[in-house]
Image (tube, rainbow, N blue to C red):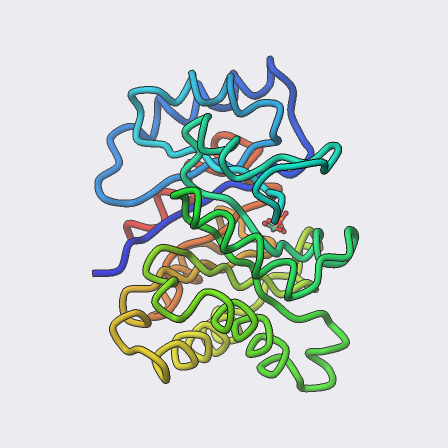
Length: 251
Ligand code: 13P
């Protein structure tokens, strides 16, 4: 059975007071979750306070970025071992905002993926096409390249300890969700690409959908056979919406 998962990506939002209120509400409601995984990926600075708040809960802690370097003279950067010091279990790598706004290419993303695994954490590898790429009908080529750069550096078996998030760039923060069929089509493609190299790895791989997931569209997205949950931006900041999305995993 593949693990189902909902991960909140808070991006650059929140403060100490708001974070506490949000998580108090989420913890109170979600603590009885069974096998499903709920993760919150918070800004670096809030890792210590959120780590404390999540102690003795079933909600896991994640980060949104990491340096590809192990240590050294990299002013302003945070290494994977620093993240694991704060009991981070997941780290988002290759988010389209990092790729587009901070110039991270497939090679850098692959190095970050490896750095996360070397420190004993699981990367949440984001892949996805822009609107121009979708219109030019190169979605699958783009995603294949994004996957292959990781596979060539880390090997396909590395996906035994990773999660993939398909996030079409045109659906992020725009209110334009991919239809369940559009998302399923790409999720199935991702699983097939991995299956070509290792069927067992593909069958157990959790593949999340991200891009304007809300409480009202989560159930139909999560009902698709290759969609194992979601990576949630805006709606992860609203306790009731996030809770409803987590609950949609069960239906
Ligand atoms: P939204 O849910 O706000 O569209 O963001 C999706 C996302 O980028 C999650 O990583």
